[in-house]
Image 1 (cartoon, rainbow, N blue to C red):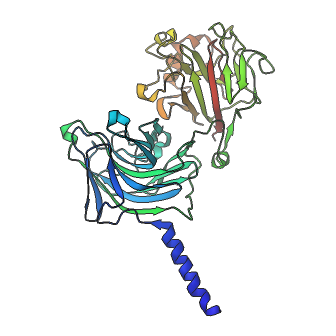
Image 2: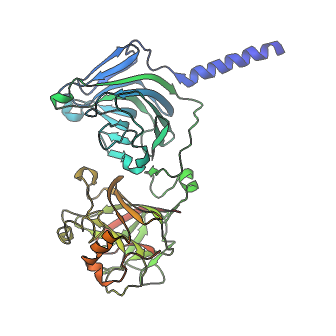
Image 3: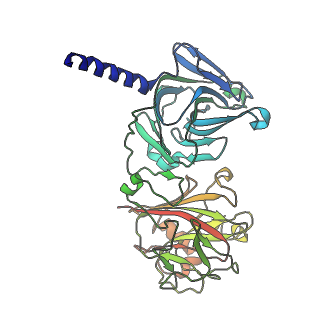
Length: 451
């Protein structure tokens, strides 16, 4: 019997290898693929899939005829111009009635973006939710992609998580709540300028695995976009993240002027911390709430949903030592309906608008990155140990400053905060959610202390 063991093991190993590696491109033809949506050209040249832009075509996709769930996809891609754009769709779908009957491909995309912003490796939700992981969230990876030469791409879609790498450098990590399977596709981006027509993008060396998947480790300091409300993954926990709201109760919070949580004005239910509407003024309802703990250097992430005309804020370095009749004093990430609330037009040069450092620095944001009223937005404040501070809105960095610097002190001197000595320079302080008398919702509040 022994003489049959090794051949059987060899046959099983060979079968396992065959199952693990799926050949989705034969190197000669586009068999197993189909073109959808636009009119850009795809052909095979010397074992390479070549996509060519066509003037006035919409986004065009070369789509696998089969759908895939969990997989690891590796391939090499080259784009010849900084003016071009491309991507690789994962677990994606097609609506033939979309785009006025021209067809709509939608789903998560590994972005190939050689422009000056350098977001290649970020994750974009084509035809649906827009950017999920702009590479501002992992700026150290922005230079990984090289224009005009082949770059190695790795995409992991395992369970509800999608991770990406460019030339071996980890780039993006998204934990999602939708799309357990779908097709894989290559994109040639729409062009409307003659200078962009005829530009090519190249794809080769495809390696798709669907079984025996082993995820590569991701660095602990790379931010995770976790779209599952009020949760942290085991990897986030290991990296030092902790929830400040578990979606169920108010543990860890108390009123800014109280020893306990307010008995009115706030509703903690249905997975949200909900500021109930009152008189539309500071402290007109249940009042501000603050964390029991103090923080010095930290990474704070939170989701918020505004109602029409609402005003609120997330404050940090709140010491509760300043004498004030209104909201507690601290550095404030402004939470505001810029279009309907009058505060957006007050202050100086727009420094009271959404995501701004309230009354001090305007948030430099594009309208496309602001989710509409009634939808969830993600705010983020990072305070490094060296007192460098950054504000983000939906993954895009909108401002940065040096806490305690001369430039910072000069801004404070021109603001309403000038009456408080050394405003915003305390070594540590509470985090605060503001009651400004308007209805606002918060969830997915998490923090990581930095050292």
